[in-house]
Image (cartoon, rainbow, N blue to C red; front, side):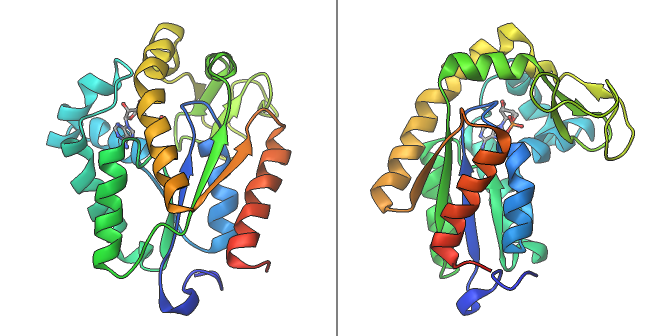
Length: 230
Ligand code: AMP
C-alpha cells in the first residue's frame, strides 16, 4: 500500500474516464503506482469471465463482441463486489467503470455505505475521429493485455510484447466497424457520467490529444493537486 493509499484511514477512489481508445489502459498503471492502489478494469473482468465461460461471461459476450455496453444489471453487482475485495481496501483506480449514469449512481451508493466517495474523476478527453483512428492501430498482448499502439507507442520488436514476450493481437472489438458502433453507443452515456462528476465537483479534464507523456503528466498533476505531492 502506497503512503497515499489509506489517507485519513479512508479509501482513495479515482475514476478514470474516457471513450474507448482514449488511453485509460495505458495511463492507469502510472496512477495506480502513484497512489499505491490496484487498478480495477471492468473490461478485463468481463474478458476474463468470457474466457472462463462463466454465466457472467456468457451473458456479457454477445454485447461485447458487438461493441455494445453490457446491461447495468450484468456488470454493476459483480464490479462492486470486486471493489469490495481485500486488495482494494485502501481504494482503487477504476478503469472502464462507471460507463453509465446508473453505474455512477450505484457506485456512489456503494461507496457511501462504506463511508467513502469518488475522490477524483480524471477525464481523458479526445475528439471521436481521433479515437477511431487510434483504436484501429491499438494492439494488446495475448498473455496479459499490455497495451500498445503500432503508430504512437510501438513495442521494441514488432508484434511482440516488451513486458512478457507474448504475441500482440487486435481485440475483436477494436476492428473498424465495431469501433464505430462502440463510439455511437458509448459516448452519450459517457457524457452523462462526465456531467455527473462535474456536478459533484470532482472532475478534472485532461486533453487527450497530447502525447502519452504529456497526458501522464497532466493526470499526475491533477492527482497531486488532490492528494498532495509525494
Ligand atoms: P474496455 O476494455 O473497457 O474497452 O471494455 C470492453 C467492453 O466490455 C466494452 O466495449 C463493453 O462491451 C464491456 N464493458 C466494459 N466495462 C463496462 C461497463 N462498465 N459497462 C458496460 N459494459 C462494459
